[in-house]
Length: 160
Image 1 (tube, rainbow, N blue to C red):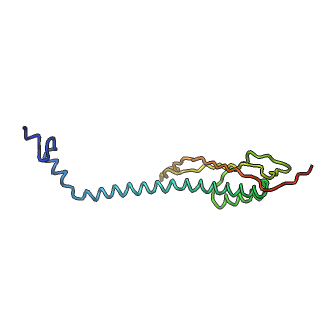
Image 2: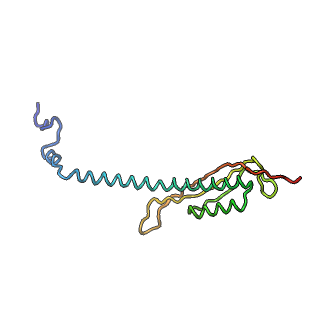
Image 3: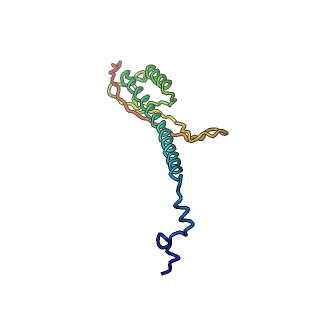
């Protein structure tokens, strides 16, 4: 057998010079720890930034549910429903657009008992990827849409 290709650790091992460099690993665990810490911190910051998207969606869903409930109780899309909508917009800091769909109105935009309606709210959330110091922030607009169907709980006596 040819012993010059075998080395200390077996066949096709690196030359002795590289073996000494690889075996001298003083302080290497410190650099490993630094890199692992940076990766963990980066992942945590990324997860926390995505949580803001979900929080915004939950707030939009809450606003829509409250407005639907007011319309159900009132039996119409009244000023009270718009007051609740604008108050919740101020509280949450969102500015969604509200539309009322799939509704059959009677006199003066009244919704009869057990008639259904759908309130849809749309919002575009600006998700900031990063903010350079010399330019405007790089953002992605994430479209959000919440549709909730309700049923009127008020009986309107119609004039014949």
